[in-house]
Image (tube, rainbow, N blue to C red; front, top):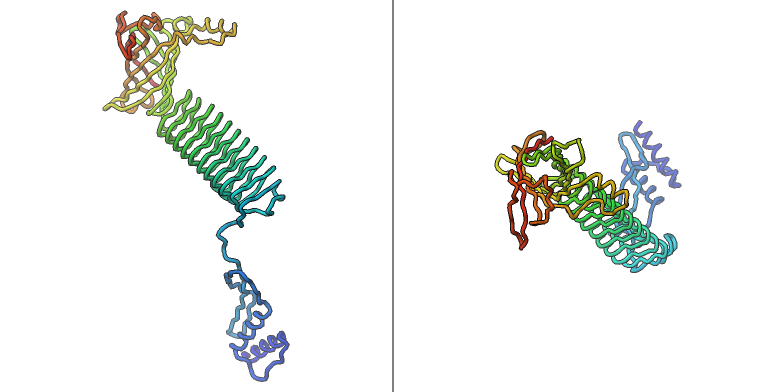
Length: 419
């Protein structure tokens, strides 16, 4: 049986090659060699580039217990060191109408409307847009937008927006900037977005960074995941912040969120106080009125705002706060608003207020605290209202001379409950 199969196989191979079957029985080695020679002669390829051989079976011949596997030879060019060829300069009207034609790495790219290049190590400037399929080492400037698929080691400037994989330099745009990683600065008229920030984000409205190490400054809101440094905006939001949050509303996952009620024994003043930020620095806002007049009339109301710092002293937690307090008269403010008076608040009547309070433990959650509130004004100015002129129950202030100026101090004790 084996002899019959071998003869049939040999005859088939000889017929394909235009040969007559030989009288002697072919050996297995002969069959293998003939098959390989036949396939090789019909599939010879001549390539002038470096090749990489791969063996993929394209034909299998079985003769008894012998299996012959024939593989096609595939020549592949060696990997190139660059995605695109290099030319010193590219002149472009629009993508597709450029000299030289195609996508090139270059040192100088000038586009009337727009240009598409590879990496640019020098200058890429267009009237409307630039797109670089690679890195920018220098300057990329356009009237509307810039896009770089790689890193920008220099400056991206556009009238509307910039986008880059990494901005190891400056991104400046009239509307927004986007980058996965920013190492120096993003400056935008409306908003900035970055996965990782190691530098400065400044925007007219919004900054967003998943991880931030540096300064985030926005006209409305900063949003961060894990942040380290300073956040400056009316509203700051972060999962975790190691640094300062300077704003009116600060929502920090590991920060301070206090709403409390303070009562001063000497003046009968009751204050509602809100604190938000981090222990390193938080914002303070409060409003007060004598307890005997609460919800009865609008007399002797004052509002205040300032900055605070929280620290641990043995088993106590201390809050140190420097504020500015302002007496207000709602009826007077209403009349000023009706007359269109631009100065709605009487800032000339403002005075300073220093507050030090102490609570037990970490001072988190519900708890009581006590402290001293000292109102400060220039001697003889009369800026501290009459109902607040108490110095530990006495009617005379404590004098203080500082930097050649004389001040009046009105210290008062208070108790507070924090929610």
